[in-house]
Length: 335
Image (cartoon, rainbow, N blue to C red):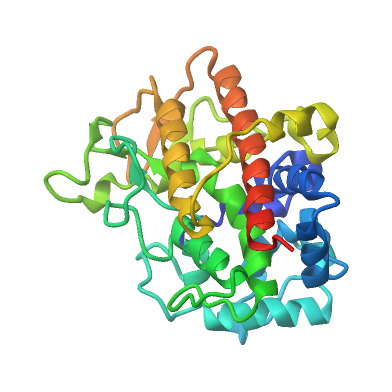
């Protein structure tokens, strides 16, 4: 089962700087600042009630605590500290209802165990220059498709198929998280490798399952950190202290206001967002060299200067994500 990473990171204290908590809340904090005083702020508050936008940004990962095999219960309250405010009986029931409608109703990847979990990502080869449904690693319910569906529901338009959002509140809870996901480069772009650690193109010559690297989760970092991330995907999910939500200030909001706006129907924006993140994934993988495959894993030593490059991209993506979340909320809630 893949992409347990974000949920596992939620199990850590917020001081662990996981994108699963701090990063998502930073995106939502930026967006909250940008919609302040607008009709969108009032509509968001009406839908979410006493759930703040930053707390709502965690909902998409916290629903992973619902266990279909245990009767759609939430068997481990307290396991994920960041989710604690969402662990009331009413909110757990709401999460369970969502999972029931988004569990086995889709065409599910062989490395997943519930439909809603595969809405958080795509795995497009970095050789591609844009997101296009049909490329290897895309699905109608991938992170772009799920974001589109949520936007359609918020616009009051039909969104058939998966994911199934029964209300605007549910679509909003999902979208606030998905906008963060789609701007994490390794949630969109990936590299596919052969047994010798050489890049292959899954869209040319056929897709070889053994080349799939699970969005960087199959890349073990060497030397291993005793306390930090163990693989490349975890490395990119982590955000440093200076990018945590409490660091969002007037200067950061001013930077977010300068992000170029989207045009056209908001339901089409997620594909553009995914295309931009795909380019950043290419930058994230640029210059990396991988070992021969060992079982289903490859070893990777990050080159000198990689941390500075990665942090610059993370800061940019968090800023853009916050700006785009605010923009889409203003677009779907103009009055």
